[in-house]
Length: 144
Image (cartoon, rainbow, N blue to C red; front, side, top):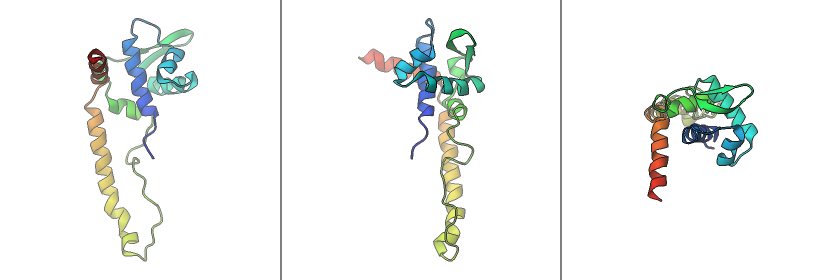
């Protein structure tokens, strides 16, 4: 099982809004780039709006960034689209056999390790901004 694609789509949306800052970033326009339907884009935009990352106005087509690119981290996006809650990235089976040496000790042994791994992931995401992503996309495009 992988992290929800909402995370990557959220990053895609925010990056494309920047690349299209002089145009209208409607859900149809964004959906065409993601290659999905506009309803999914509107759902994710709603999550990004609730987190204060984008602005949308009823009756006016398009979405704008609510913050500077350098002020939006991948961790902000990760949290905005409800990828997982705190200490929920890894699931641990609930009822191991308490009569087994592994069964009675496995959860207490691996839960702290998995929590540390999630914190490490979140630290990395917190150190990368949408500005970094946009620059990476721009650099790759300029190599072509």
